[in-house]
Length: 258
DNA sequence: AATCAATTCAACCGCAGGGCC
DNA sequence: AGGCCCTGCGGTTGAATTGAT
Image (cartoon, rainbow, N blue to C red; front, side):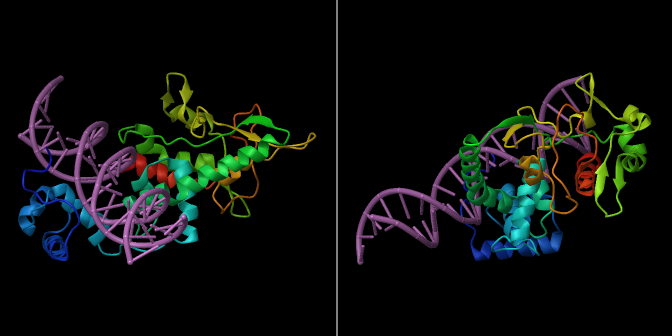
């Protein structure tokens, strides 16, 4: 349905790449429906776009992912889920397709294996079940007035920099809270920002010592600005937990305002 | 050397969202 | 308001490559 009869499919040849590259350099990106005609290619527009974005575009980084990139992918995937284009946007030179393929071939399997090993280990220890806060991506309409008019003020309200440069995210003031949108008719978005429906984990602890939850520190707290683990027990979860708010806010605004 | 299995990754497909008329 | 078109995204496929027997 998308590709007219007779349109070429499959691996691109060097000649096709050269034609496409020349066309984009001449006319610029966009107007993909015109590209096959302009370039003199017997390909559908989607194929042209994909080839350009994933392969021909300048500054595309090829080869092995570095440890830093892998670390970032894991943490962003925890934060954003399978939103590969957003994750790729944080990795200069990497495409969404690259990130997705890397995740599916390398990371997904590794994580499944390590999770199973963790479960085996934890089954042999004393297990305490606690609720763990995990992030959940939100999509906001750009028309929301509280985003347009008060975003910087509200950001300052909930975001506090410590002497050691770590960031503490605190419960919003009543004014800010009142300006924030209501979800599901009765809860504020920020109350459930880090909550996942099936979010619970099994961790081991002993005596009356506070329990540090490994899942929290490993899964969502970025390496920078993390000074301690966080355990939630009958509280809202807003009382002083360390978090890379700049990253969250950046992603949040990217989603909301672009 | 030949065959089969597993892995990788480029490319395709279908769908959703947004803009325009 | 509703339909059409375009773009972009995520899931999936399958050809090519690599490894094991």
